[in-house]
Amino acid sequence: MCESLKSEKGNKPFSFNTLELYQGGVMITTEEALNLVKKNVAKRNIVYHMLAVEAIMRSLAKHFGDDEHLWELTGLLHDIDYEKTESTPEKHGVVAEEILKGLVPDELIKAIKAHSFQYSHVKPETRMEKALIACDAVSGLLVACALVMPSKKLADVKVETVLKKFKDKDFARGASRKRILLCEEIGIPKEEFFEIALNGLKNVSKEIGL
Ligand SMILES: [Fe+2]
Image (cartoon, rainbow, N blue to C red; front, side, top):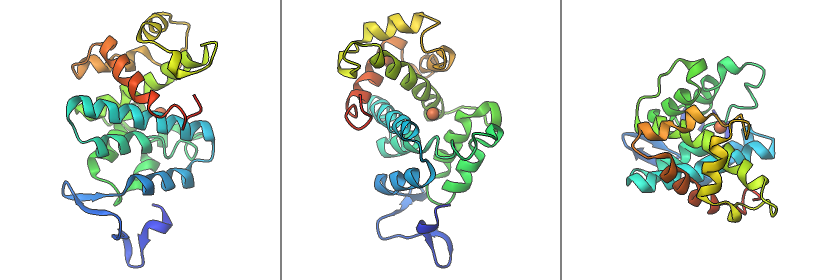
């Protein structure tokens, strides 16, 4: 847990700008979450990746009429332990829980652990848990699509471009097609998912240098 967010008496976070009762738990603000990310993640490309997943999750929550703040923070914080677990991937998600416990609702932490289910053995079950996995994977595909544009800009990427690149198994191989297709398990055909994700990502193109 972030030292600066601890109170003197223990793990309870400062309450001056924290929503104390958020679905029966606590929830930090977006600004506090970003500070926590910067404290735990040094590499700019990983911070950009987390900002990208935040934007796509927000776009998807809006589509579902779901809790945008909960979903965007889940995206923003999902790889907070990435650098700390690079040499111990089996702890990916577990260390995130240690950092975030008491600062965010349990369902956010469970979604983060479920996104690294191959290590945590926490099965993705809810809509938000499956969405995080699909958004994480599609962010890599969308960024790769932007980088092969002559302009290297997201603004020039169309849904048709993404569909074409999705079918090309040798393109952006790290962006798991199987994980992306979890969108269909939460009721969104991949064409529509690409449109929602692309629009969400374009909202933060400047912040992520694309
Ligand atoms: Fe990720």
